[in-house]
Length: 433
Ligand SMILES: *Cc1c(COP(=O)(O)O)cnc(C)c1O
Image 1 (tube, rainbow, N blue to C red):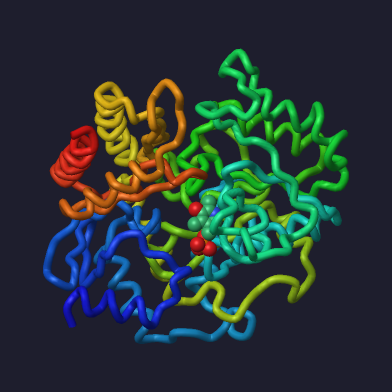
Image 2 (cartoon, rainbow, N blue to C red):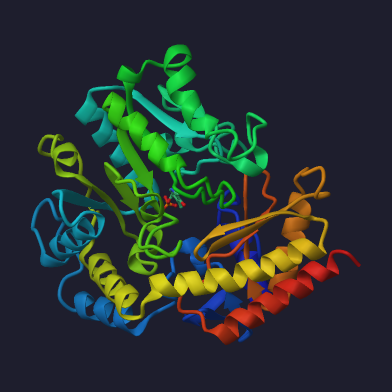
């Protein structure tokens, strides 16, 4: 079947709400390259939205999946236990803290991990409230959607939302909600929580958890000042609030550290991971301090498929590849090259309002005019469309869909990286013609 026939069939049989920005139709993939059903090659700088830090189909992962598939596909960990689940839990625990005792449970998706982290924090603290942030994205399930910031089309019409969810501004310096400037603001957005929020919105004693992305992903790759997370951690410590760090998008080397929270020297009480954990196999983890995680009684959390053995074997292979190929270090090299290029675009084009990034998580915010910073989502979309036509898959993001971003596999070669950035440059240049 050719591509246009497949696109037509997709329109006829697959729901519209599961939106596809580009008419891309993959046939096979390896590393940072995909081939579509017509044999055309693309550089994939989307990595399946941050899932493929180790690239498409690494040999070690494919081999582990094949091997496990020949042994057993499923038993349900709550019925019959198995080594891959236990081994991966141990590795994650040791990655998060080699000193304090950590525990891990597995589920099938990022959103499900968010749900479980929130459940555990509520049970542990016996408190109902969750504090989250503007421009946050935490998934599409009931609690995940409630914690998510962007209204259309993630929330609007899907009422009611989970109660006791409170939202405050994130440290989004380019569009500061308080119209302040860093560093003279002294991170007022964090101070606001202790100075005002607990008096005017919800008592600290009623807040179970603060849930935060160390760099906001879908919200537009928003990198807060280094001290921000530490300030939030202090608030949590002062009030017995659980700090849930959502590293579903930032985890596994993306930001130039294994986890992005390491940049600010904080420790999560609970860490949520998914996306790049298992190279595309559906797997997510909730890793947290043992005394918090084990406060839940027998049967209080779990699931039929969670921690599927094939997925866990893939996850073990991913961690091995990250280490052996030194991909965490590589993320910094990639990010440096991309940031240089993005800054050169910013000098050249009045529609690049902001350039930001951490490690290999880099973005440009597209605006009507630098001086006014009014978002231009159509222009961002037009650039990404042009990139696709020229053989490069990029992504947009942001509350106003006006951020151009990439989540390139960290196995990308320098040559591929240069080629991709050249295409992006051409697509940008066309917008001023
Ligand atoms: C993608 C994402 C989620 C949701 O994960 P799903 O697997 O799509 O449910 C939650 N939080 C963050 C930060 C994400 O990037």
